[in-house]
Length: 136
Image (spheres, rainbow, N blue to C red):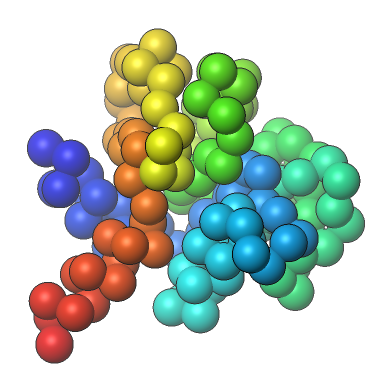
């Protein structure tokens, strides 16, 4: 199920809110969304410490974003995930993803219970790169 869910999220998501987007280029919270942006996804940074990132206005909270969000990618410690899951559900996101080494089963269950797709402990950059290589 996870592979089909990832396929669906990569195929159907156009606008991705990235919770914890970093201004530091060496961090996954920066280079993963930058890679996704270079491959056609609109990235909306969510980080209260930033006013802008990757050429886009940054927002302090998911609820502050004035446009529909397809996917919420979370770059936060696993124990910090639940509030962001609740916010993703509240804003009507279609799915949620937790970066490699990030998982929170309780949060994932809440996402599923809301009828949304969710992926834990997977890197969307790695997944997109792998699918693009197979398609060649």
